[in-house]
Image (tube, rainbow, N blue to C red; front, side, top):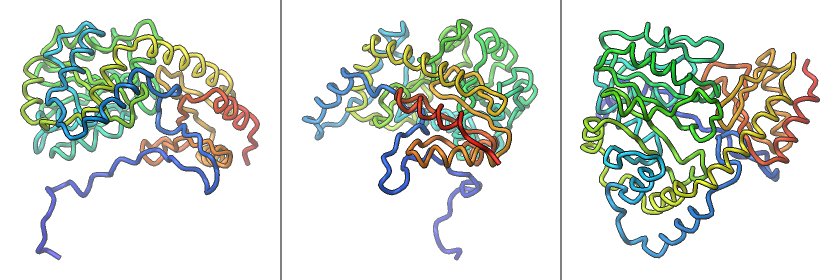
Length: 362
């Protein structure tokens, strides 16, 4: 049929994002370890703030997320006027692509970078260029080599999903220094709260010292995944461009209030980070062997590599049979022999370790 509305060229060629599985077999109680959600739930203060909004559902949210921006500025020592909030960080990534990518333009990302980057790039009419990684870690030299006269954005997830690897502050600074000044470097710091490496930086220093760097963050990994709250810190000229196309009420009131409370509850954030580090390191040590390789992670998940793709499938099914849902990453990222396992409750971590350590592969 030809007499019907048609999407823009290329839209139907985009592979849609596939979320992690969330249900086990019928009648089986599921423990979801597939989506990198908070292992300790949400901040109690955030929950109370969210509940309070329930009495005012008839009111539009404040259009600029002023209360949330004020909280973020106070907690992180930032200029609140240079913060943009969104319906999850994906919303902000879409806005960045719409502002800075057009037909025939290019964006660059690392080989195993976040799978939303191709979606936002192609939806804006651009082409995504993949730079090869070195042992599942982004390579500054490869990223810079992929830049062309058509490049408008460089996406860098740091730490990266699904590998958990990261680039040091020194390497990120080298990356920015090697970019043309008209290429926007998007530092996706979604897992920043969980990083324990001493040489890591979220990127605030680069944002404040450069005209072509933005930092994107999220509350989804801190217990507010259901509220969909992301935020961006960037140069004033980028913030101005984003606010011109951002939806006037793009962040719901409950999310704004919950996130503001969560941002100020630094004690809960610290407890979450300590818990994650403890069980991330424990699970990594338990599973590392000549049968499985755990890629060192700075996030709230680990990536486990098996000798064969069939071994990864067998392991996934064995965990699923016990109600433990992890992420198969082969279809989305081309790592057919890998599973991504989110850090979750202690009992679940011990069960995952017990099952995988005792598996017999054909």
